[in-house]
Image 1 (tube, rainbow, N blue to C red):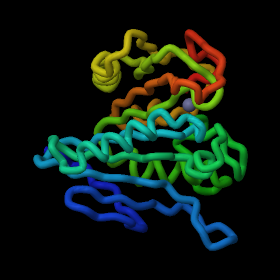
Image 2: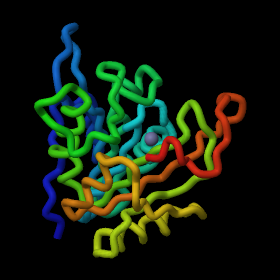
Image 3: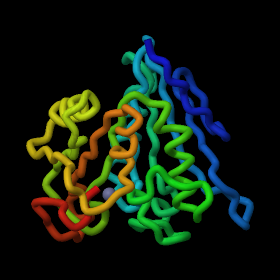
Image 4: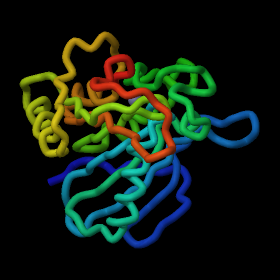
Length: 230
Ligand SMILES: [Zn+2]
């Protein structure tokens, strides 16, 4: 039986059948708008686990955003078991500006988890995201990719532990369907969302997808996303 509490949205912009779309607001801006996290939720036809897919912790990595949009369009009827939670762009301001890091404090969002409510805005977004969404789900796919700069061979990172969370993470990576799997050990940085989520017993994976769209990208090609990992 699923014991998670579904994320509550501060603003709902669309409610249609099983689908709810809206925003979690983190902070107000001087112009009256908000620093927000855009969320789409689809309740399945049967009870089950809560599954989170997020994108654009790095604002220029649109591959996952596109995948979440397509999933929401194709499965808005809820023809699955459990609940789908899609976060189209965790770092929404960077997404809008087409930049990797925050346009407000220039921080790298995926080095800040679990976040800190007493620091500047990217830390606050990470904190709110952790508390109000990540801790309320059972599984996570956190999409990354080549973004506007790189082509890369698709690879899926998984939790580098041999406990049940790591074992499930490895299974998720194997099920994702790409050839290259990456045991994310000895990372030279902290603050990665799925690594922090694992500390709360939530397994997750990080697909690094290739943004190849013929004629639209000018990026360099990499075989391993070594310099811009996760
Ligand atoms: Zn990334």
